Length: 326
Image (cartoon, rainbow, N blue to C red; front, side, top):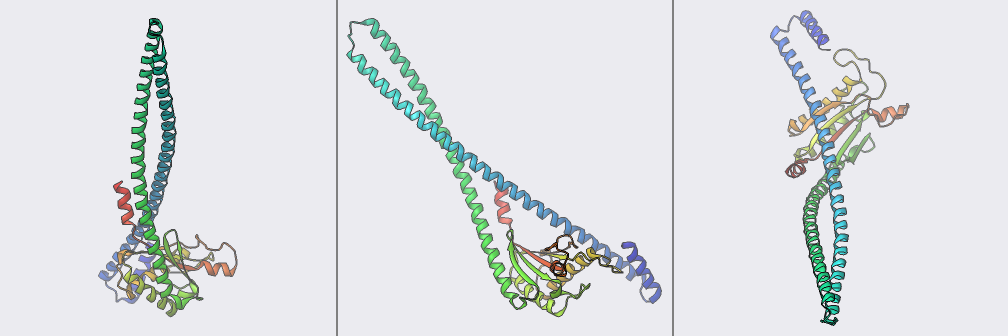
C-alpha cells in the first residue's frame, strides 16, 4: 500500500506541477507517523487485554487460596476438638488412677510401684498430648490470622470492584441520557464485562461505503463528546466493523479492513474536534467483518454487523496497585 501511495503522490506531483519536493517529503513523514501510531495503538490494545486476563487469573488464584485456607481451618478445628476430648479422657483417667491409688493397700508395695509407674506413663502421655494440642492451637491461630488477612484483601478488592461497577452503571446512564434522542436509529448502549459499549449502526453514522460522518452521526458524536469531557478517567476504544460483503475500493481504502479502520479513525477525530478530550485517552481499531453480531447471511444481519462500537473502560489503577502491593 505504501508503494502505491508513493506512486500516486509522484503522479499527482508530476501532473499538477504545483507540489514541491519538500511538501512531498512532509506527506511521506505524516503517512509513516500514522502507520507507526496505528501499530502502537494495536499493541497497546493487546497489552490491555493481556493485563485483564492476568488480573482475572490472579483473582481466581486468590479465591482458590481462600478456599484452601477455609478447608485447613475446618480440618484443624476438628483435630482440636478431638485433642480436647482426648485431654478430657486422659484427665479423667488420671483422676481415676489417683482415686484407685488412694484405695490400695499401702502394704502391697509391688502393686504400688506398678501403679506409680503407670501414673508416670500417663503423665508423660498427657504432657505429650498437651504439647500437640498447643502446637495445633498455634497452627490454628496462625491459619486464622492468614485467613483474616486474605479476607481483608479480598474485601478491599470487592469494594473497589463494587465501586467500579457503580461508576460503570452511572456512566451508562449518563451516556444513555445524552444519546436518548437517537434511540431507534441504530443505537444501543449496554454494559458488558465492566465496560460501557456504545454501538452505532452504519446507517446512523455513515453513508454506504463511506467513512465520512453524516450530520445525524455527527450530532450523536457531539453529545457523546460532551459526556466524555467530564469523565476524564475513562479510556475510549473505537472499533470499526463491516459486514461480509467485499469492499472493492481504490486509492488508500481497498477492502473492509481499510474501511473499518477509516471509520473508527473518523469517529476519533470527530470526538476530538467536538470535545475537550485528551487524545491519550482515545484509540481506534478496525475489526473488518470478523466480529459479527449476527452470523446469518441476511440483509438484516449484515445491517447489524455494519457498526461502530465505542467502548468506555474505567480506570483500574487503584485495583492494579492493590494487587501489585500484595
